[in-house]
Length: 355
Ligand code: MG
Image 1 (cartoon, rainbow, N blue to C red):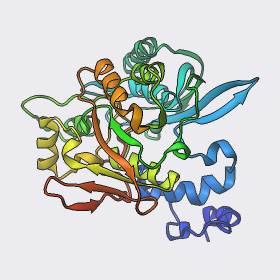
Image 2: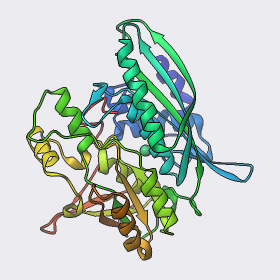
Image 3: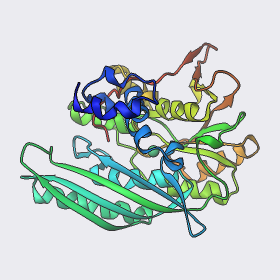
Image 4: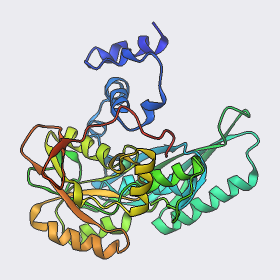
């Protein structure tokens, strides 16, 4: 028995998942798919269980002195460090800002931890830090505390960043997977697949007629606009690793409801669709860094779509489906010819180290 298996023995006693099938961590355990779910269900969840964590949302809802706070953290290991439309610094700020926004919170303060590899050009670090400064200003947050560690050459792959964030909850009601109700309408804030294909094009040296840029962006403005307009928001989730399908599966699973999506309603720009076809990817599974799904009550769905179209004029927000009676935890896709298929989680990510 390995140390990991011994250490996990206490926790797996209450968890039926066969974590022991993988005595070592695989790259796919960080991919946002089935294996990462198993890691959370089998190792982290049982070890740290508490009401805030068990909600399985993008950040923890906390109450302090009568005030609702959202708290979240994320690490960034993307390769390459710079890509069309963004870089690791912008992602490290926007990713944490967006997880706070998904809790219905206005992001306020961030921490930044840097793990630097000996030999990293100082100019590279300065470029990343400048990008973080710009992204923080754009999202209305301050980086108020941080940490730096340096590891030996060859043991850090340049630069890793961990950010944590605190935000103040502004939604009148709770926003999270537990609030999703039968009949809720699913809205998508824009076209999917740009981030994954932007990274892929750099990594593989692919050249397309029109270069694909990452969608990396803060989502505070559209979320606050939904709340200000009085939209009844049940749940929000930003689409990152595992794409639209991973986000929908997580919510279907956590809410115990079925989600039905209309394939033709999901916007995908032509260069992304073309790149996906060439490379054999399904855009619904490809990573994003500036898109989210909103589950809203049917009576405010029309209003919500109008708000998204006003605040995101360039991304083609759309109504893509609804929460239906059916099998708990299932996500289904209806095609143009009326066929229905199940959108299941992949075991890992199509592209490792995408964020
Ligand atoms: Mg998230």
